[in-house]
Image (cartoon, rainbow over all chains, first blue to last red; front, side, top):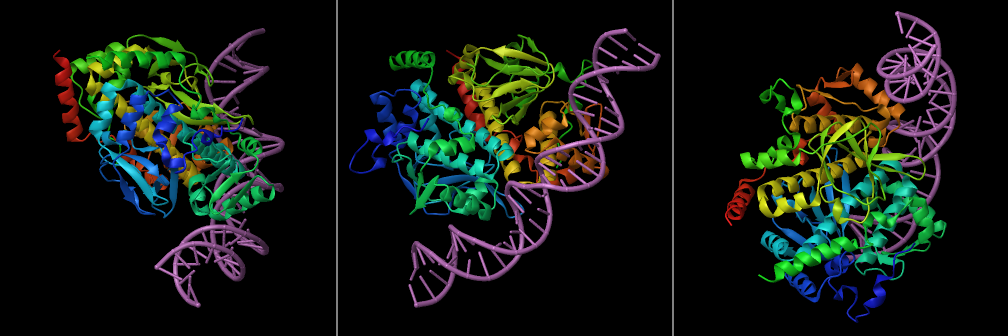
Length: 272
Length: 272
DNA sequence: CGAAGCATTGACTCATCTCAACTTCAGTGG
DNA sequence: CCACTGAAGTTGAGATGAGTCAATGCTTCG
């Protein structure tokens, strides 16, 4: 199976970001009401910008607030004593960097920008408030953090058990699906402003080897890249090289039971 | 720094499991009241057993309830199409296998036993109820899931950037600290009933290579193993080989601010 | 237009894997 | 109580995927 062309239903003239990517993403899990959407739009209102190649939050620092990434790409990473770096996750529009970190005394990793980035800072109070008053949104946010955790587990599988080709293919597929889930794909094409060094730091490979794998894929007609736009020319083949199965992203939506459960809660909390 | 000899304060005659390991673990984060402890003890009352080498929850299945692991060791893993297996985490006493998975339609990985295991099944309602009525416990459970996530990230760092010796050393240190946090260490000694194949499936190494690394450690006087009891003879050296830093486990407790915040909530919800 | 960063390529090295035998150990049944 | 069995641990020798080093080309942007 191939990611749905999520963009087909949003042909606003002002481009793919016209719709709040967080709403887009959460809608994959539960259908959101008009008022849910309103609240999420309000949350996303405040704006702060960060330049390219800058830390939004640094390891050891006290986490200050949650950020909703509205535009650009960031990464969750850790620098190592020997000068190396491991990128754990890429954050794309619609992602929250760190839903929950405000529980902790200090960051155990850093979050840095890969491109210039627009974020909406969200206070602890806003999130906490939501939990009490809007169970459906809370559930969706919760789901989103489960999805993130599942992605971490999948990266472990990749690093532990796949060879270089498999790892690269896997990452490309994952990024395609994630971009599709927030409406940032055009068919099987999306913007990938990552250097080969960054890919290597994610995949546990050297940039040189990433280059060779990518070259191989290009020669086999599996991908093409130009102007930082990546086209997956043969998604099925790539998914099979990767042993990729999108089910860990849990994009199939919540079970009917869960939806009912949270709708009930919603009705109850709406009254008093 | 070396893990505190957590066992020193629990010299009950009936052994290290006399105290609820979940309470032990959560206390690392916030001080729990007598009534908190009572509630957690009640939660841990129900009992179910699983034999060795059995799935508690299988990939693709519908998650049924949360389990508190009371005794034994289990693993979170995924089987791969090529016959391989990747172990993502070990579950030790005091761990909850899957705090939240009941939000999802199906498991994206399996949970299997490595030794015979005693668990307490906990219903969705119990957990949900806690959230409303006992903010301090909820916070602690939440913290525990953040800790788990941090461990996943650290495994990514290990697999991506450390060599075989570093990976093995890292895992041993992590396990020592985790066991210490639930009172299951005796100095720098703890029970490790894992085969070298299981270690390899966790670390992305072949059992043969795990064996050689372990042999090296033994010859260098860093560890010794007998009867499945592992002694870390030189924790500092191992930690430096691993580049291990325990801060990602966030065992230092919550910030004063957070503690105050949840204590306040607690007072409020206790009254009506 | 020049510098800096990134991508590409080749030649050589090395950590880890593979394959395969052999040993040790714990558990079982005669 | 010991022989038998199967799983786990050890060890050696050779193969290989990915790393290292180093040179060269290509962009991009000030």
